[in-house]
Length: 405
Ligand code: PLP
Image: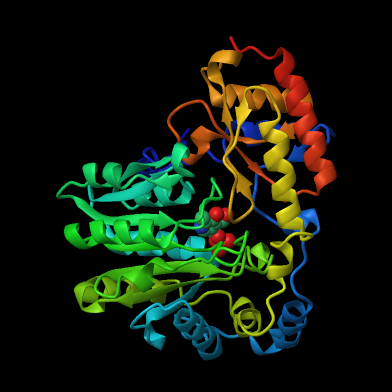
């Protein structure tokens, strides 16, 4: 009998974030067990709601959104994104430089597919949001990971970045605010990274999907604002800031010195045309979402859910013997370190599986984020404090006796 295998181009694609631990959690749920899921950055199931105005507008607009739009997106959406780019001081952006997508995810894949030849290298942070690594490899490129340093608030290490550049390096990816660490990068650090990109003539891909989820009165700085002389692509969307992951609304903005990338931009337009357009009802709420009052701000200040949950999880994890965690400044993730010697841990996947099976709490091991040592895991702190408390109590109990091997 003829059987069908996956394409060989998938063999090199690392995408473990939905791997064996999540499979086991799904199996447990199918068998009627309740699993507390701290694994995915999807606010809606945890009681976060989109702004009322956004819901109202998608409902009102849907009848007018039955046709394909311009491949890059409807005028009103792109105008609103252009004005947002102006507020973020992103230079040299015209309407033709803005592309809406079915989430930022679609555009991440599209932009790498349009750029990479076999063997081209892309610098990607470790730990990373693993879609970047997977899409680079799928496009025939090679993901080269640079270190983000836990000892320095999880900031990228410029010396490590520089040491990994080769004649094949085409681009650098910056994820700021960061998933999975929750780090927010200061201006001076971004300037250093931009300077490296400048000296080595790299494209900058800046993933800024959490830019409106910043705490402690800090300011998000768009990388592109520091690089008017380079070619930059900035990614964002409404999934996180407006709690509408399911609507699949993202965009990318081309900026800076576009003359350097004329042919690449033609490739981007070709792939954009091939997918016709992104979801038009989703596009119809971009103007409403980006303008005026931003309800997300209420979540990120003291008394707001994301802020209060961050305060809780950070303390609760650091109170567990053998666990330490850098305080996140943005987004809704924390990436704690586990003392591998104390618990004799050699596989972070096994640790996450053992914890899941015993306590029915789902976390993702650090290896799911292209972190090479078995000593980290990611917690999504979107659930309410009572659930986070239950999860951290369970982790503390579990670690009282856990020894791997
Ligand atoms: N970039 C980062 C850093 C993310 O964490 C995510 C989703 O978790 C995405 C991009 C994808 O977002 P979207 O829902 O817009 O596809």
